[in-house]
Image 1 (cartoon, one colour):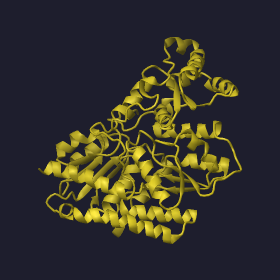
Image 2 (cartoon, rainbow, N blue to C red):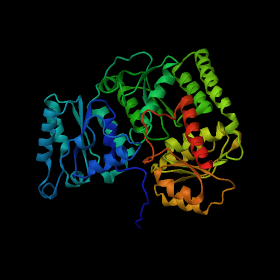
Image 3 (cartoon, rainbow, N blue to C red):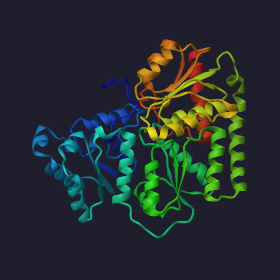
Image 4 (cartoon, rainbow, N blue to C red):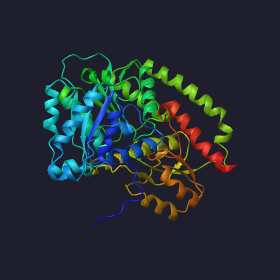
Length: 438
């Protein structure tokens, strides 16, 4: 029986084109109806932290804008023309051709067209990302796999100490640029040569170095796991899968020690860096202790409504470092069943034996129903998206938007990763609490 999904928190597979835009000087070419790219860009860009257009994004993205004519007679000629014109007028280093639902259903063979352009020396790959195939987390993985197979070149040369870092899904994670930058800082402080393909200062040069890396590091509950396994199979690159977004001192220290042990970094270097970071972190926390420990305003219980990346990372920080208690945690990324048990187990690994109940759902109506019926013992904290403003007011809860869509905040380089991210998240939570308390 079909169901109605209330207020979705992700988009279709074609939305993975935003991952192309996250690679500097890479351009998506979309073979779909005229409204697909615009609506997906509005959801993941404009109304999600005001991330905007970027380089050749938004309304500048080449699109075939297929109509009834192409549905009847096929749109391959129009696709060929758009690709040809894109090479003439777009200044880019890589083009990624993507399909929408219409072209996938019609069966247009874009692979044949793309192959002909590649044979002419054009830097182009393709991925069939019809929206009905899955959400944009799935689309992201499809696109990365296509780039691995069609663009990256095999090599016997490995660069000592080079580590590819894969983590969040660009644009879906509103804080992706700041998060990647902070991961670079954390790992570089240990002497790691960090290679990231997304965000400022990276791009095609970084992308071409992927096969030369000694290791791949994936920081994600499940998104990207297929990609690092693919890289291991194709290039023989071993990977470390760290399922938790490291936020705050407890999880970040564990993360750094795990990475160092995997790569073989001197423990003295690691412990020295952890101490340096913790000294700075607790300097600021101690200064704010008068407010942080004020029982009249302290939010004792919290609920997360986000993808597994943030639900896990933020809940770990709130329990282990701020001392809050978890109510039900909602994971909204349409997690494949084969990963659910492992994620559920991670919600049982808080300090002092604390555990949290977790529910996987893509329907915002589910957490809304829970929040209406739940009798909280004190004013709760809800960490979700802009969708949760109404229910938060209704039940008189504190609220911070941390997951898509974030239409009530502008996000530039803000990060929730690491020690710095723990401070920023603490600021955001208690700013919301103090604003409500006035």
